[in-house]
Amino acid sequence: MEQGQSAELVMVGDTDPAIREYAASLGLGNEQVRFSGEIPYAAVAGEMQAADCFLLNSNIENSPCVIGEARCCGLPVIATCVGGVPELVDVACGILIEPKDDKALTAAMRTIMERAGEYNRAAVAEAGSAIFSMEVVGEKISKVYKALH
Image (cartoon, rainbow, N blue to C red; front, side, top):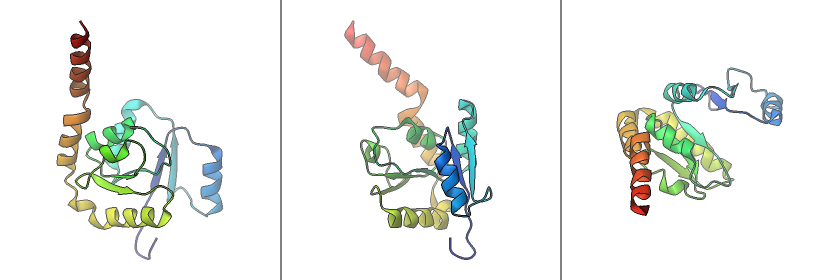
């Protein structure tokens, strides 16, 4: 981080102990990286709503539900251009980067830090809910089942 900037990375979910060891080897303490471990499903929304950005730096994905969940929480997303991810993230709700590109990841994180207030979180949540809410997805599934009868 540049002087005068600070950030906290919150890792939610079951993480490999090697990630914790790697963070410690870099001298990153609990004020820079917090490992929450597995938390109840309802608490995930709370973590997302308290965050400034959701980051999915993955080399392989299909169509991860967590991006829809982040969008429904109004959270801007940084994600890699893999699998179906580009269909889930646009400029109104986040930034797409190439996988394994640390410079692009760093630049995207800086952009989010500098322009966090420019994302209309209510609009991100509204657009996300129009696509990913339980009601919308449930209706789509219901239409498929009804069409089979």
